[in-house]
Length: 326
Image (spheres, rainbow, N blue to C red):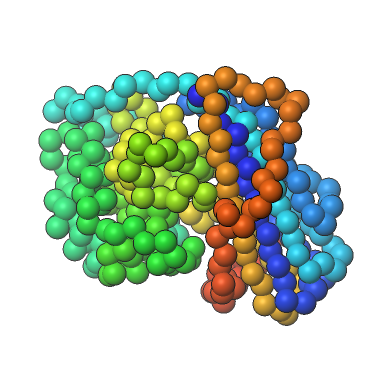
């Protein structure tokens, strides 16, 4: 399976800002489950791009625009091949828990077992843990499959019901959220029973025959859990499916704080508007690598506007993270 992805991000400022510093995580991963055949990143105003690979193998691009500008436009284009994955059984042997504990001790995955910025125990999390009977019963795979199904039924998918910096309690209290919330809640519950679990950001190719609840023209998030004999297995609680050939992975981390598509700050005091559009195209044959991806005539059909600027706490957090890097 081959997928062409075009991801547009536009920051519009009410008045010119004097400088922007940004990190971008939109480069699809190349590993055992997929291969990024081509990637191109365009930024306007034009600037020099740099990149590095973080400790989890994510490709991170970064840049600095030190001139006044009223908007910042980022377009990421990629071509990804995803071969058929291994078949995942319905359950594991009863000794799966003991094998899992041995695997977790041998693997360097301790950070996928501990609390993180968006994954912290709360009374509301404990309440849903008891409601859904998330504990060491049966075998690890059976528990994960059931939880993937139960979260889909328990929490309503409502676009824009939470923000990127919303704690899991907001979705738990209202019983509604977006893919990021589904992923965070599942990770918190899974780590609570000693299964290493990580956050995955990327895209999903939606089809008419599927009952996906996540939007077809947006980025997506799901989780991966480490299991004996199977490795890292993807679960998509937003759509109650296993992650497979339709899921395109860009980055993995402890939670969303490790893998946002864009993270940065600007110098200036002004309001900003964020516009995001994603298009994922599918083909059974690889398109020529030297062919440019088609430019849509009207991005407005794909645009998801965020009317309000990022929260003050999110901006302060981003600024602190940038300051620690200098």
